[in-house]
Image 1 (cartoon, rainbow, N blue to C red):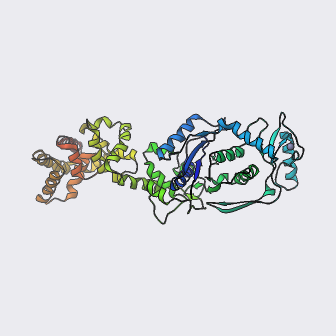
Image 2 (spheres, rainbow, N blue to C red):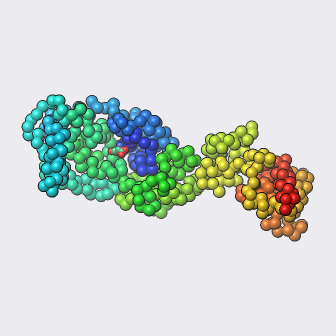
Length: 476
Ligand code: GLU
Ligand code: ZN
């Protein structure tokens, strides 16, 4: 396919949510796959609910996800005259007409149709009256009264609607403002859009929009209506399923590439591959394999997906990404004069256990606070910092203090020798040592932890743990 043009058209009435983000991703991918264009349009005509802060937030989430758009952003509120120029064209070519019916009259028509067991609709009262403009008058489409409107949806397949199902919809309200469907058709045409991908909550608008294209003699784009994302219980997706705005996932420390891959996989597949790089998505996504059934959101899978991406990021890259989170944990100053040099080993030690950048940063805490500020888990302290534990720690203080070189390798050898030479078991020695170093029974390899802390800090922790063990024993 050549000259593919797609667009994303959010309404700035809230932050970018998962469903919107996925629609944007599919549109963006289709354009990037075919070397086409991807445009952005802000549908801000709902003046009461649209807010600049939401536009800013949506744009920021798009940038964060790497969904770069082409050209200028179109704002619908700035295009009223353009829309009306198309309405004028339709009035001139006889596919639209002025209607003088009052809202009360139209309500009465609907009521009447309903009473006769028909669909509530405008009855075409002014269709042949040849009225001109006037106060309180709107413009309606002179819709065909028979025939079928048929389109082949990229996701749902062939959709056909009887023209008799649709009434003469309003194109321009009596206050001079174009209606939503009118604006969308003009925009998509003006922007050269060839493929409209959007949520299937808009599928009922599509036959109406097709009628407008036809009335204007314009080519009709291809449509793809993506089903909504459901919760794991197949109910409407909500916060209680772990669904949040994209901006909140960013604040939680999700990697944008992980969310991108995860969302693309919700409703689209490529064999049984689960994780995709940005480049792979662009290569494989050609608009095929879109699932017409609603996909269910699975938060555990998103976490898993993110953990996978964290594991495969180059370590310096991960260190750079976690840095802002270390700062919000209040730990950045504790990294010393060369923060990057300290962050890389921390990332290496802890990334296998983390599911996002925020909990990765938090997991650094025990290694970044000083010995005196280390917090102990009551449970692990009670269990492991006892007389026997203190005995091991005291012996290790002596050994570690006199090591000629203090690094991961020498510390490991010394530890192994201590256990072997005395016929101890590792599981007698490791728990008090781990509790002394980390404050709890977690963390990474003991020798790496000690290497990171350095000799002085390691010994300080062991000493503090010994004195805690003694006070505990004194109490008993
Ligand atoms: N502004 C609409 C929405 O946010 C999108 C309409 C469309 O894509 O045609 O749901
Ligand atoms: Zn009328």
